[in-house]
Length: 175
Image 1 (cartoon, rainbow, N blue to C red):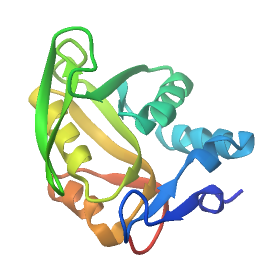
Image 2: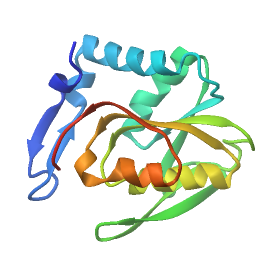
Image 3: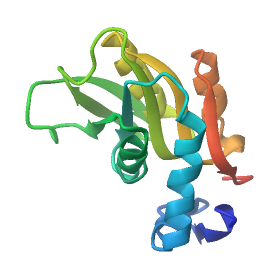
């Protein structure tokens, strides 16, 4: 089964010139969803990981079942003011302005080996902020895992410059 063939492309969404890679078509297909989770889980089954961390929101959809398959805990990284307990956060740059991601202060212990998961790596701004936040809390990012990489946009290179290993199930050329 080709994961890439189950991903829909929507032209000019959410802005003109953007080719949006929509994983909902992959997720609604039972074989597509199962294959995605199995392929990611298989890669990490013998890797020393304490926790799987998913970036809001599609990283939750992929990360939680991967954590379950691996027998590990799952930790969400959310946008500002979405988590109920005490948080720490990190601001990051967007195309037009800034945003903030947050994590509970007790979510990561120093030395925790974590797998960072999201659906897609494009510019890498959110993933970079997540890596820095995890590191500030004393966690070690074992790998950054994505369903989709858009290599022409540069997010993978951005994370590799931080010393991160990056893995994706498929790539789409262009934006």
